[in-house]
Length: 41
Image (cartoon, rainbow, N blue to C red; front, side, top):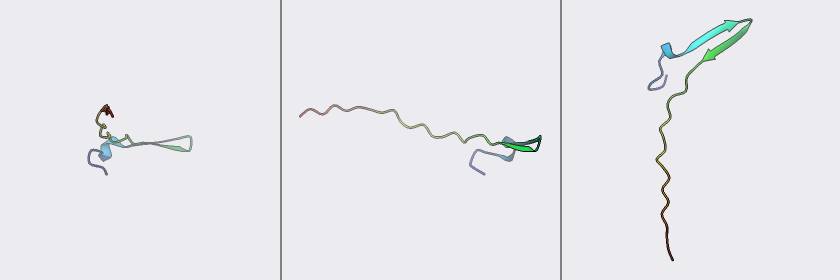
């Protein structure tokens, strides 16, 4: 498993012959804000 994902977070359901899995996405690190630097020349 991942660093923050545990077995308790994962769910599964069998309904009408269809298996549905529920696996939450791991929180992705947010990218820093874009910065614009004006270059004259």
